[in-house]
Image (tube, rainbow, N blue to C red; front, side, top):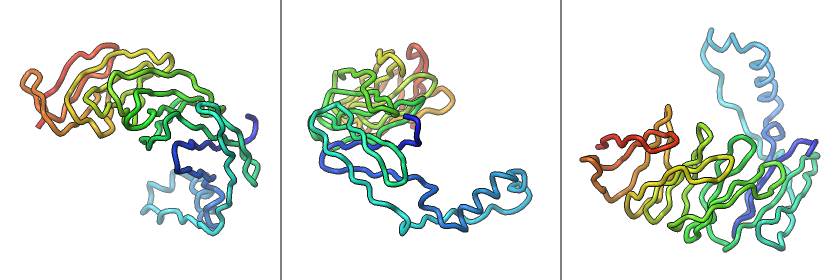
Length: 219
């Protein structure tokens, strides 16, 4: 799409509305942003300015279109000329927060589902879908070309970002409700019931690479 775009996922009964931040900033705060952009070196010379103010009175209503079929994006336009799309996932389940990286959205089919999707953020088309052995994919994290998420029934999964191929997975124990985290190539996952592996207890940390190489001791 040539014009600025926004996207939203219509996933069960709730609908998320995304607005351009510039449309919500007050005139004074927009001027502050512009000034800071022109002279970024001045930020180090003095105290940081107050946080930007969001003026909700300038928000606009956007009428999102109805979706008649699962996994088929429906386009819409906003009054200020932006484009967007709505996508409905099968099952009408509550879902975890999608992750965004490299022009793609990564989202599970909701708690109780066995699906995980990569979606083109520009068009809403499904790039790939995998079936998970366990149900309930959590919110994902993306780094170094890999997508990582937990499943509510026990398993930590790492998937190739572009192709949707499972790189490795590790059964940890029930339940796994939280989103994993990544820092400097290390993947961290936490769960309630410890399962010793080499003497370690939760939380767990794994080297994030083509293969799981190590597990570090937790607390």
